[in-house]
Image 1 (cartoon, rainbow, N blue to C red):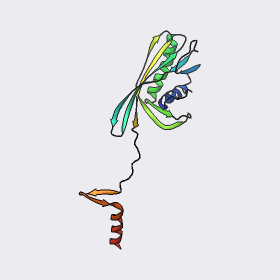
Image 2 (cartoon, rainbow, N blue to C red):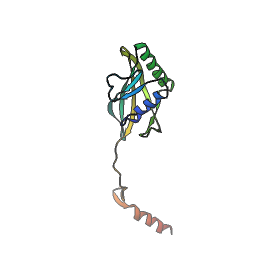
Image 3 (tube, helix red, strand yellow):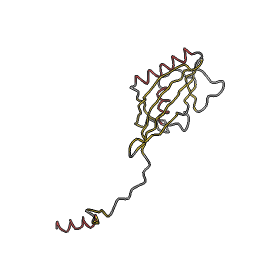
Image 4 (cartoon, rainbow, N blue to C red):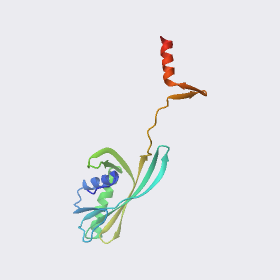
Length: 166
């Protein structure tokens, strides 16, 4: 599998490989001249980042997977097997870590469609969203708390309470 792909794209690669559709080769990045058929191409997804909440943002992805075969009917058949499998799985795809092991997470496919774009090439259009947390610097806990405008030291208050109880 290619290096430097996202956990979601890795999820699609593993999901589609598990269908055993007989692809001779999977391509990432660029498709070389004289590529093998049947084959599948995973380009980098398009993305748009949007604010989501006070602690996170959402990234909307669009992935255009291309299926290559000797003719349009054959590539369309393979693409249909993939889109049907995604829908049958409830549009839930598991993600994988860098070592290729399921990481216990999954994501939800929003849209999934396919169309022939040229002879022997069917493009699968998939959209999905992923929520990510903002980077937060470590916070040092407060030692002095202001209550009703008056500073109160938490440690002194707890010591005073212990002395009062004794």
